[in-house]
Length: 252
Length: 252
DNA sequence: CTTGACCTTGTCGCAGCGTCAACGTCTTCA
DNA sequence: TGAAGACGTTGACGCTGCGACAAGGTCAAG
Image (cartoon, rainbow over all chains, first blue to last red):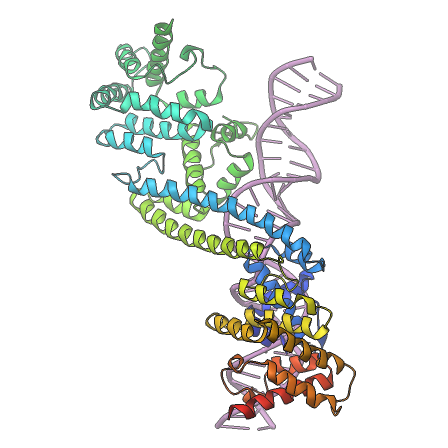
């Protein structure tokens, strides 16, 4: 048999056969005078075993180990391990599929912020009519970001806090007001008189559960906080700072 | 923010961030005087979106497409496609796990021929006591090979045919006799008088269903058949040839 | 002044082959 | 007899999503 015949009869490609030679899985056969490989039954038998093993999901390195150990005993070990591995993969797949399905089933489709948890997606759907406000859009982006950024265990709390701020029509109305006031500060100076009003309104929108510690004590060296303020216009940043200070006062 | 902070807050590695820059997923930020990248909130937001998308199982190329299309509409398409893809993967995983479990549960463990179908494994377990016979071992190898080699639809028929040959204690006894006769021919000449006996006994072991066509008309140019005969001692090969001829005669 | 924790660019490595490239060999058909 | 077409040969790059080096530069603290 030449390589194409061998490959054909076992159902793999010639490239794969040569690859197995290269890795030492399949012994190199004799060569004909013209350099062609001349295969025998032995090779077909081994190649078929390789194929069966790889179809089960073994890596080629594991296949080599199995083929090397004449004993069939080691194979059981490898397969048991493999089964555990596959179980993990299956679990991971199932989780992803579950998240996907939830995403696709949420009414309103997938929000523009990209895929977020179903809880957030529902809340965002409630503020869809505010998409004319740059601040509202930015806020949704930041919330979506926070959900990714906070440690796993905090997510539930975060979502429920956001639910307090955006969960009811009244809350959304209040938030819309705050967004509008902040939008209006886009080109203003930090000492603009409207800053105070915006800060108070904003403070009224932020649920106390959002910051479990004292909001006034947020680490002033935190690079992310800097980036956050830098991203806002100066007067807007000032309003946010003052709002947080108001919250810290209230908490005492 | 510097790169380490950004990566830390979003929960990826700095290496990944640079990789995303390289692929154009994440815009390169301004540089400080010392060459360090200086990130803002925008980058954190985008990076978090990238992470959410990759966690769902999207490839980076798809992530790029999604980020490029501002519309959230395309995302739904991509996700739907992805879901179908994941469904296929899950199916494949389930199948493999099922095969694995069957293999591990078959009594006698996994046969030395490597993983075969449960049907064959059971049959092989019945001939385990013949492992002293080189011919019996070889036969099992070849049968295992054939199961891999024949097209999908033929497997069932193959296994049931083998079941006729090795499925009952009486059948196994007859097969053992044929193996012994063939083993005895290992060093003999093709005109050895024992060849005839071996051929007749062997012919009695091969169920007529094994070759659905006429066995005598097997393609004589078939490279695999050559390899098969070449693998046997000359007298053994002669016995097999005669056995097949006997079967072809009977069939008329 | 040194240490240690950051940052920079660049390259190789991983799994399992697919896919050229550039060439030799063998058969077959006009 | 010559050319086409279907085989074979070795070798090298490509793909995915980064991890893990190398070989440095930068900066704050002890």
